[in-house]
Image (cartoon, rainbow, N blue to C red; front, side, top):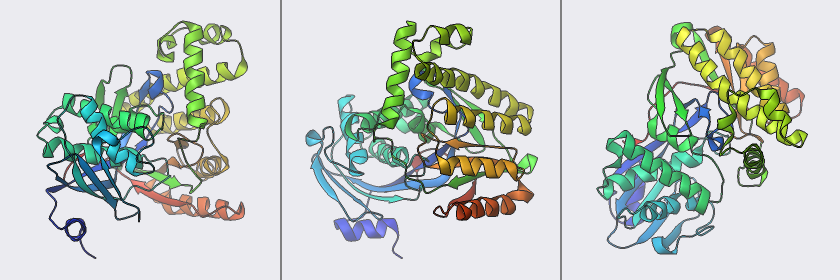
Amino acid sequence: MPSLPETFADLYGHAPDGVWSAPGRVNLIGEHTDYNGGLALPIALPHRTSCAASARDDDVLRIASLQEESSVEVRIDEVSAGHPSGWTAYVAGVLWALREAGYAVRGLDVLVDGQVPLGAGLSSSAALECSVAAAASELFGLGLLESAEGREVLAAACQRAENDIAGAPTGGMDQAAAMHCTPAHALRLDCRDGASTQVPFDLDAHDVVLLVTDTRASHALADGQYGARRDSCEKAADLLGVATLREVVGRPLDETLAALPDDELRRRTRHVVTEIERVDSVVDALREGDLAEVGRLFVVSHESLRDDYEVSCTELDLVVDTAVSEGALGARMTGGGFGGSAISLVRAGDVDRVTAAIEEAFTQARLAPPVSFAVTASDSAHRD
């Protein structure tokens, strides 16, 4: 099979200037907290999206993918909400956002190879955006990959691309993970000010594996459900007189909830506040090597997402319940929900048995077969 640069050359008639890649992510805990100014704890996946690219002398973007038959040609000044549509919006939006931020970028020829599972809640979109952003930074001499501050600029541009051009009202956790994660560490991300801290995440030392299960259940964040949750949080914060729900963390929770007018807002707020608190509890447990406590907190987080935030589904619940019943230290859904993936902390010797049990549970429930795989904490966006 031809390499990505070889296919690029066949498609565009010249060699690429380079290949850049960025990872998908798994969020260990801290779900639906990013747009509330809260905390999250992602790791970068070994699964990456690669982008072969070359700079152009004009403003034309030519975008193609090994995984998609469709391709697009568009000028940067023609990019707007919903144009181009589909997956190419995530590419075009990055160049548009960098230009909007005042950076001198031109057109690109781009060929994408996406190896992050699509629709699995593992942030294939941020991996795509950040691979393109890394390419643009180097090709146009922006120098943003060379510093943490520059990577924050790139992450912000990628988030704006996703929000304003692709139309998905996500927070910035996915892009920050793709730009800042390091091998063998989780990233404690403060979404209020963008500060991040590397937290050791060495499961091998404890003979434990992080098992990801892609449920294959449909997962789409631009279909209104994600936006509805975000709207509820903004309404609750407004009623409580704060900028984000992060501001009420540390206050008596009962008093905070009593100040809200209906049960739905109280449940949404309770999840966000307690989930933010759980992030630092997991960080403390990881630093102490207490993986049993990490697993317990995983389960509590899933129950909160299922019952208070109502973003789980039959498939995600089935993975969590089965993994825990088979002896996993803990399990939870990860990502935005409504499908996608779950994660389980499993003793290394139990991985095959837990995986088989999950597959059998899906068979018995007459659900499409899930796909499970072990992951390690990997690296952020870079030139390959």
